[in-house]
Image 1: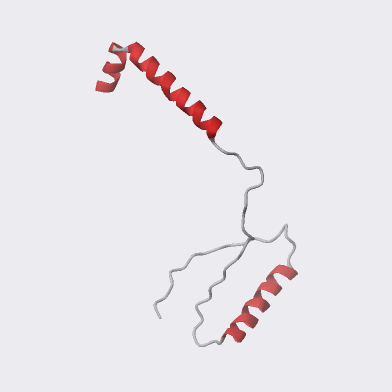
Image 2: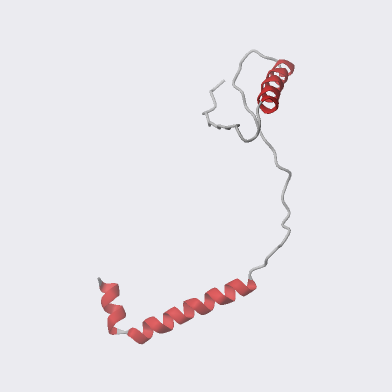
Length: 91
């Protein structure tokens, strides 16, 4: 309520403050660098499966078989991908 009363009692101060904020915004936009082609890394997918007792070769075969069967047996229009996040289990 005090802010509204102060703005109503000093309208020129509010107008000058708004002009100053707008001027700072324009100057910031002019000085901001724009890169049309920014440097981005290659996309990556990380898969974590909490199966204990499997060696890396068995796990790789298991994940490759599942991923290949999912991606090769359905069309992209009818595929529904679901992602879930799980907390890591303490070892």
